Figure 1 (tube, rainbow, N blue to C red):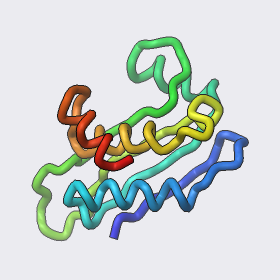
Figure 2 (figure 1 turned 90 degrees about the horizontal axis):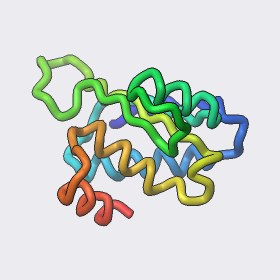
Figure 3 (figure 1 turned 45 degrees about the vertical axis):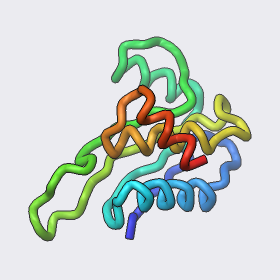
Length: 124
């Protein structure tokens, strides 16, 4: 089972259950059947601060991914730590599914390009 710890720091109403269901569906399709990850909803200000701190770009963004284990082989008994996805509801609006899929694919090792775009199309 994929454990998804959700935190809404955005002040916006979000479909947390729908987001968790989407995350689990994408991960299952990518062959991940157990592990832990965080899903945070943040304000534009926090999104901007995170993007500046981690990517050196001073702008708010729709979603960020902070991968940890990816799909690496892990020692027996060690739970997979996928990482964290951070989403800004004020930026994504009603189109929240695509940025979440994009960020989750980063957690499992995809980089921008044709392979990632093909996977995104499959999951939406």
